[in-house]
Length: 144
Image 1 (cartoon, rainbow, N blue to C red):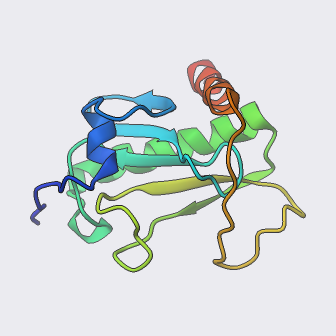
Image 2: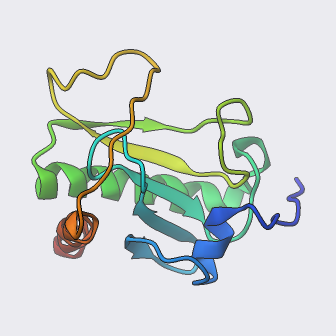
């Protein structure tokens, strides 16, 4: 498996290097989780390997468990912290992958929320709202 060198347009690598601000909810040596700035629903988290990996097909085996374990933990935290009934977890692979860095979407869901199929309408956070959502998810991650 090979990975390519990150391009200047790779916003995830910029966030990893602290060159671009983000509402980070979790970070360790292997993965980074932060709020999507244009969420499907508020609390929509992106989880990416810290090491640059273009696509799921190039993900080294040793990063699979940390990436999916973090997605699982974030899903629990979204349910507990935001009151979501569940989550939609997705990975785009080349087609529809708007960022050239592998990332997993964990989107809060509730019955009747209006999300249908693969049409992902986007919303925006009001001033200060993004930090508040990130704090709620972080708190639940710390609890358990």
